Image (cartoon, rainbow, N blue to C red):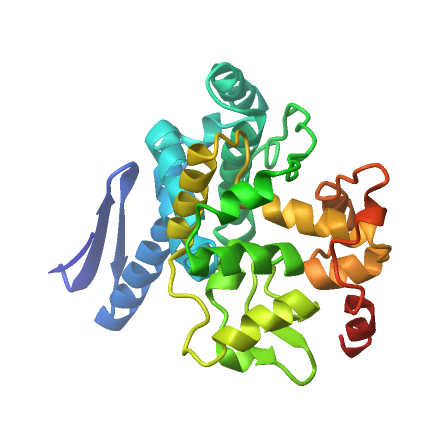
Length: 327
């Protein structure tokens, strides 16, 4: 906090802030004193200071990262939750101590407690905060942003619907949930995308769904199979197609699985099932990517788990091919 007092015909500025030594400077004019005080307070706020770097703590930089970066993210709630965790663990640690050796020790301390994916998220969150500090806050680290080895992630989930599971689920779901499940299987849409659907996103004439503001931020068109067209046509009269919350969809789906003695199946696995079926029906990688919204074909490959000889089943309407020309 800055204080300004007049002594001996000059204006003396004194700045005190926890974690930093106090600063003092004299000025002839009050305007100059106020200007310097304001600049110093701003510099201290973002961590740009002539003080040794050990004076800047991770929590201070993390708070600034939250305000500038996370606040504008679509996934702000999830990212902020991870940031809070890292602040609780590293908040009182000087950023000068967070080097490769420090992160390696942190990784090792978590290995037996959480999955490799969780460790990757936590370590990368710390690295993102430090990188932000260097790029935008004048932070100076002798060795730059530390980098360490992280365990190789396991291959994506390969769970697909087994014979008879679909009928068991349909018998235990409400009409609305049955439509959600069927539309997920016919389009490969994410749970959040399905729940946000509105009538204006549907073109019955062109047999297309327009996915607005998806996870990757790029809108896309999805061609409607005969079954998908039947579902949206019946529901398009309502203001929103589905009157469900995303978490409720997962809970109701899991409840139906448990009552049917279906093990290891999650709602998101329906997206895996749909994408795998697209490939089994003969769609190209580019065509499937345009439907699923994947910009990285390597990530798309994690979703495709083909069943031998399954193309003969013909579970997907082949009129999807004629609709692809409208994308």
